[in-house]
Image 1 (cartoon, rainbow, N blue to C red):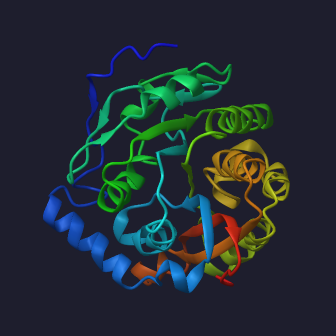
Image 2: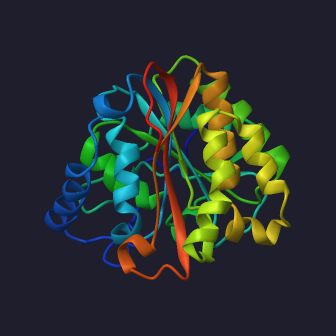
Length: 292
């Protein structure tokens, strides 16, 4: 399908609240997180095809997210396809924002129109800018992408109702679109919300094992253990995006998964009684992985 508004730009929705609104302050904060993150050679030896990264305020989840992005700095990509959950708009399927650029304090990211058009031709993906207008799950990835790979274009996708059929259909669409592209897949999700740190870690344990064994079905099974209204609190708010990305990465040739970092908001705030948990993970073909 043709992209209808390539000249339009998505304004940053949470700059100045969730992360610094000025280029200098944002770059310094990102560099601080990256400086205390292991280099890719110390974590993975091989081709990274997909990552999982959190999307809380940068001061809370930035250090964890930096572990995911540090793992891809030495890899060349033609496009980054991001998949995150919708926090504000309910809808069936997956929403594509087809605007030509996406603003960040560091400068705009560009849309990859050919890949976007390929994905929009699938039955599960539709152009829906409204779903992206206030959404932070993808925007929290933009600063890292603009800082580390400023010329690589993106395709932003937001998943509505995270049903099994939608997740499976998106994985199919990703595989069909990306088979001949050097693509990085990014799943944006936080884990358990507003439980104590010990319980959050226990709830995360089967998810981390699913990552290490590259088993999207096991992650999906954890989601199915809870009613839809409880999955975001007790499993992951972006569980559907994570499963779709894991499934697509595996079918595109990934053979390994690695937990790069687990943490929670209490690591920063000091409050371990009510936390949001965060995960950085990578999928690809590795000869060396970290325990995480």
